[in-house]
Length: 243
Image (cartoon, rainbow, N blue to C red; front, side, top):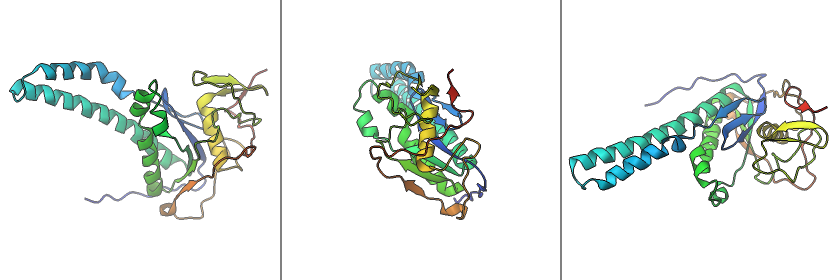
């Protein structure tokens, strides 16, 4: 069965940066946020109870089959919640923006952290990136990817200073220049600036497309070098100055 996908006109539409996270699934550089459904955490107790009940049933019995089907149903529910969340984000971004900048994540390395492994798996980052890439080709949204060593969260999007003292627990921070940052929004802004250095504000993050919508591509931005920072300008409406 073939389904025709309608073309989306991205002429004059803005580009954006997308930062993924555990608490909030995705945050765009214009402040748009998508909540993480935390599917496994929501149904973990129910799944544990169903698995325990299944283990107590005699194998091959009708009650055992019913218990097994209940466990399968819960697993499917978890998968459906994850898929729904990633499809909502990827469809919204690729249909409403001419381009999106994402970060190349070392998911395998992150999973070695046993404190975050369960949350990382539940968030489904790799699937989200995969959907952005193929839907970008469908709808003509250019997907650009920044290398994993770029300090998107620690880099001040106003002055360019790097905050080496920033930890995972710091959701907001104030730079020495006086700019107050939301960690996720600041990271998304830096990703957008890294891929489109000429941007000068959230109202002018726009690109002119010379290619047909079906010619969108995924571009990989090279590895960061020391002192190699994007053009840093204040994005009005996204960065609040602290008096």
